[in-house]
Length: 254
Ligand code: PGA
Image (cartoon, rainbow, N blue to C red; front, side):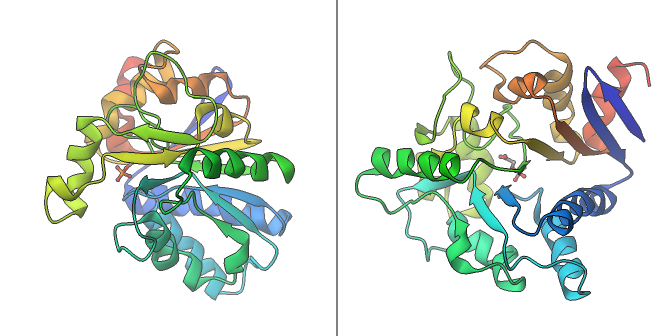
C-alpha cells in the first residue's frame, strides 16, 4: 500500500522482507541514476535486510558504487573502530566489504577522535563542502530518535557529541555482553545535518515501533520526538511493515 500524507510518502509492506526489498529498490535506483550519489547511511537492526538486498543487486551486476560516497549518521563515543560493536565495524560487515564502494569514499563519525567536537564539526563541513547528502537512510528509535538525536528540549543542529538516554542504552544493550558495556555517549549528525539531505527514507519494522511511527507522522513537531522534524522535509519516504504501520493506519482510518 502507498499513502501520501501531508506531502510525505508512506509505503506499507507486508513484512520485514518486503519492506527491506522496497527500501533497497529506492537506494539502488538512486545510485543507478547517479553513480556519484552521496548516501547518508544508518546502522541498527532495521536496515540490515535492506543492505542484504542492496548487496544482492550489486552481485547481479545491477548497480555500481565505484563513484558513490557515504556518510553515516553516528558512532558510539568513545569506541575503537575495530570493536565489533562499533558502527565502523557494522558498516564494513553489513555493506561496504560486499560492494565496490571505495573505502576512502565511506565516512563514519569518529569514535576515536581526541578532539571530538572538532572532528564532529569537520564532519559537517565535509558534507556541506560536497553539496550535501542526496539520499539519507534513517531508522527510528523507540523514543523517536533519528541518528542519536534523543528527545530533548531543542533540536540539535550539527554533528556533535550526545548523551544517550537510558531507553537507548537499554535498547542497545542487546548487542553487548552487559548493559554496563554500552557506551554512554555517541557522535551523531544533528537534526539540521539530517534535514539538509535532498531526500530522506525512514525504515521501521515491528509492533514495537507502531506508536512512535504514528506520533512521528501525525503528532506535534517537537524535539521530544526528534523524528517529527521530518514533517518539515519536502521529500521524505517511509518504508514500514504492517506491524509498524498498524497504529498509523488505525488513526488514519485505513
Ligand atoms: P533498530 O534501531 O533498527 O535496531 O531498531 C533503530 C534506531 O535506534 O535508530
